[in-house]
Image (cartoon, rainbow, N blue to C red; front, side, top):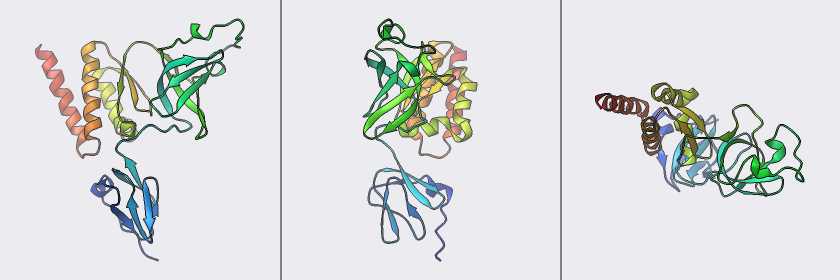
Length: 238
């Protein structure tokens, strides 16, 4: 049996192009790839990812595609008698039923659904049901979910969210400690941040946009620390 090629750390973060040969041998094609014979090629522009014997390419750009269990931040854009329609930064529109929001029975003959969440308000929710033939169903029953008030929303490319979080939460924990801001991270590319001041929130915005631009590069954590130190020093001088 042929031994698969071993990829070093630089190759695992390699930017690949459509049609580029990225592996051969006993590897198996995963997301964003196709195979011809024993060779695997990229079908999109993205970052090479190796998971066991599977070779994937994570798209650099592209819309958010819902997955059950994802946490998302969305804006209510419409209502029915018993549910809210939510823009979740996706080709699909989320549905939040009153039964997945309220802790008591909902009576559409007595209750006005917009008294609980109105059009234009923002929620942090979990996707509890989805398939390609029906829009995703949302819930806010779990702890930490629900209507979001105050703060600031930052939108980035959804595929960059894992880099914002970092390995075992390293990057987002760094941001929390250094900026004293609160965060909610939506896997749909929407981030909510609330700081003690406008300046703190704008610093976070600058940092997150830098991570988005440089997510595929090495040494990013060190550069983020340098940026934070620089901005804190500038604030102290003021």
